[in-house]
Image 1 (tube, rainbow, N blue to C red):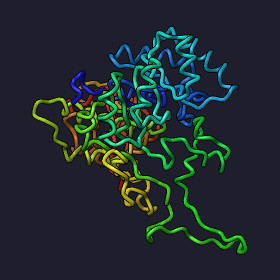
Image 2 (image 1 turned 135 degrees about the vertical axis):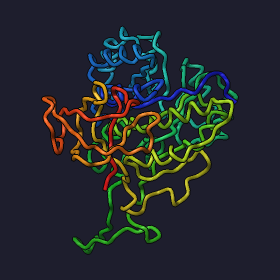
Image 3 (image 1 turned 180 degrees about the vertical axis):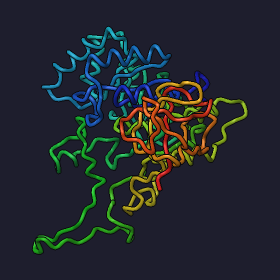
Length: 406
């Protein structure tokens, strides 16, 4: 059993708003990067100047910030990597996440003071590979998604570095993300952060001598999304991962919105806190309900408990990207019983809303009064409008408001 420390909760930060949201809802650490050197190039991301601001904000809030340089670089990328390291070293990132041995060598020679975390893209699935990176001087290993819990235990028994694994989020059909499909079909490589999610497209079959005549691709008569895995969700098994020796639980989702970030981080924060209580680990039904509130492709435990069952792949378009709630707004400030809210969606007088606030889970509040900044009464709101809404005492600055989708 890993008794060295309380497992870290590590959250994605695709931009400054997402970073602040993740930290607000309890992330111990965040990971972030710039588009050119990150495997989430489609996230909003940061520029080099903003990274310093983001790292400073995380440190001010008592959180850690890890910088991603996890692309598979070509020769043309090396100069950018050197310049990037020069620009961030004074900001004091808590670690750099990388997958390429050449980048590892550059960081160790140019910025040896920055800890190094080896990305899941390095495909660490055995103890020999783990020992190799430990001998080189890696501080943490982010294990491949293909390891099972018994293999994690075996690696833990042989290495002393920290171990991290993904516990929630999207899964690739390829081997820990090393995929050429997007580059082949859309000239955008997933290995440099530009994945088009080609594996999730709806495919048909056309026979060479019958141009224009398309045949559907079926698997067990359930549909055509034959390469689209359900999303990973290990909230019911965090105790098994902790006991196997995992030091950090990682959430995927730098391209997801703040509704997703807030809900996932808040739920896993409660779960990790429960994990270290003497009373033992007990999964709350409302955690599972919460994880179904925002966009997902359904859930699977991936490879951790054994090979994924055929049912863990989506073959039915109706099961793709399910969600029950949509974001309404963000609480900016309080004034007595009312809050100033930045709207992110339409809201009509009389509608029910929910506050993503500890202690208010599942409670609905009917909005009977809406005022604009001039205290004029409104019947509805617009996106990006600032309004005043009545709120319960428990609601905090930075909390999200949402409503159930009809």
